Image 1 (cartoon, rainbow, N blue to C red):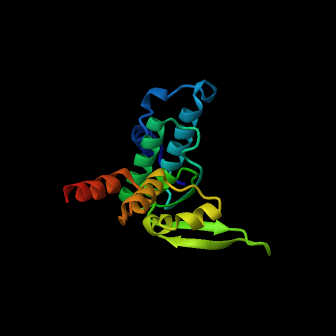
Image 2 (image 1 turned 90 degrees about the vertical axis):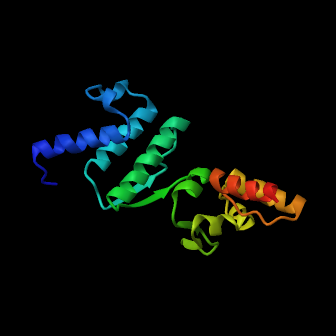
Image 3 (image 1 turned 180 degrees about the vertical axis):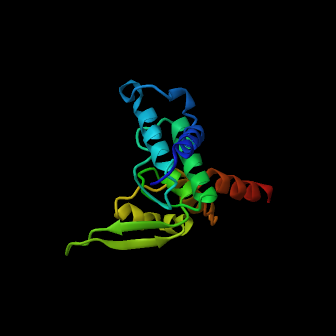
Length: 174
């Protein structure tokens, strides 16, 4: 991509720091764990500072700390470099916390693929029954909110821990 050698080193250093991988510099790939390999691969892509990043299950196989580091780095990349991140992800909690827009695809019986749901995560996850009919996992907190609504007659609408904390604190404060 036409970057001078000094610029390459600076980008690599920044990408390794973003994922807290400086200690792995110089280690052979076969000596890394699966999570370390995934983070190194992501760091190598981030070092190029692309405008658009397309990821397939970037959190798969990571422990909770690695998952949080990857999400934090992707959030930083999105905000600081104004990068667009398109990803498939099977972890609904991560999607609820990270995504700004969520597309759920379906394969109709007549073939092809079409968009079944489209919108901000909260609006999409409110359609829990529809999501489950499409085979999409719903965040646990969405299920908790739905259960509380059935039992208490409330109208909770949360998908992340922060949203749940605010809603429950307000409810209990009454």
